[in-house]
Image (cartoon, one colour):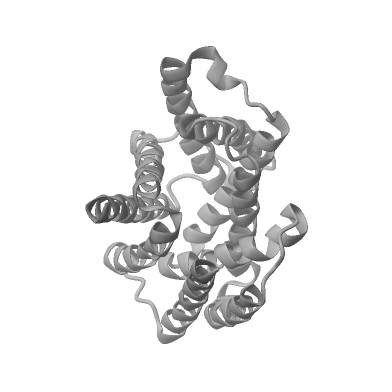
Length: 293
């Protein structure tokens, strides 16, 4: 049993680390193609691939969710969270963006009260207070330098939290593959429409033509690795349990910091490290409180 849990934890760590590698690849496309177009292409490739696998595995029945409106909500939240997150890593260091988005577990705990009818425990409010202090530490210099774009990771965290709540509400309504495919199938057309809408505005930074081959390859790489990463996290959770796997998600922060420093020369300053430590500490406190319950 213990060996099985160790293997599960290794799967989860590998999955979370792989997600950060994909984020770094997205950041490498800043200036090469508009962020909305990149998001649309990445999810179009992902939706096509997942749909093909779902057809082979489950046939036409796999495309009939029991609650289509809930799947629409999941995919919409994914599209909005992705667009905000991709936009953030285009303009901000990877480590700082990742640190702020780690606010999402705390936000999920808070929003589950009004949206799912769950009681918000005192530990959640304590964690929320400390997490907000951490966000303020990271945002303070970035707001002065970037202005409102520095709030994009916060927007991404909010929509990611709403997506997680929708995940809870849709538990048991399909296989892990189908649930992943539904989100991509909804998110892809929404992002395509957003990209075309941005193009017709005529704004220079949003206009685009056909992508270079390396942009297509990078988007395909991110779509493939993200699918593999989510699958590894699923395997890890099924072997070790969600409570054991949850802290492993913070390996994303470590990998993002190393890749941001190595690939882009973004060395995190003291405020970033301090803020990230406070946010991660709040998340771990919330996790420990949930285990005690």
